[in-house]
Image 1 (spheres, one colour):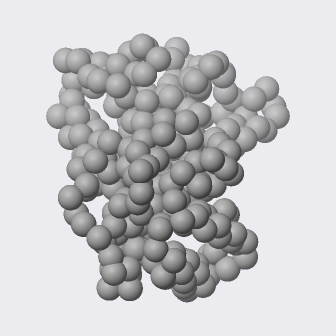
Image 2 (image 1 turned 180 degrees about the vertical axis):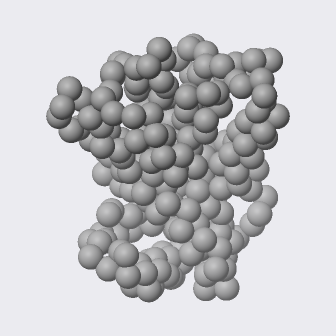
Amino acid sequence: MRIAVIDDNASDRKTAIALAKEYFNQRKEYEKMQLVFDEYDSAEAFFNSYIKGVYDILFLDIYMRSLTGIDLARQISFTDENCHIIFLTSSEEHYPESYEVHAKGYVTKPLRESSFSFCNALDYVMKQFSLQFSGITLSLNGAEAFCALKEIMFFEMNNGRLYLHLIEKTLELSGRYSDYSTELLKDSRFMECYRNLIVNMDYIHNYTEDSFLLKNEEAVPISRRKKQMVLNQYIKYFLGKGKH
């Protein structure tokens, strides 16, 4: 894992790195993880050497010289969705703006006094990494294949056949509906919105009286009998994503 710390205060950079190392050292599940830290004393210095996909986490100070942390975050968030931004700042003034750039944390200085918030932000980021790489084993014509959960828009049984709808294609699967539904529903992104139909809520763009509208303009039905429960679950998930 490669982490960049971007702050014009050298002491704050060192403290952020020390706290991050303490975090990973205290969690046994990450003990074999290789960490690389890079330091930058300005947003300009980072941006001039930035290459998409190199960094997993950015610890980013807001108050810097001509290019602020918010300015840099706007540029990074539009080009590198897998780079997770955690703001480090001496003020809560820009907290609303952190939502606009999809920041995963907002930690106020002095950092040592905010170590709990610092660790919470890293907890959330590491959970996102887990979701990013989790997947399910599929049975296709007698052979097995791995599919990342993030690629699945919805799964259904239609006329006795199983279909897995991905971003760019649809697969017909072998096996039973319960073989896949049990695994999918363990993940908080997935919800059974209709009989024998499970949708990935990350792909929901909007909803109507009787359907969820997906980001690719497809629509999946909402159960009339379970409508309120389904909508409540979706709203709870949607609002939960916005807390970070």
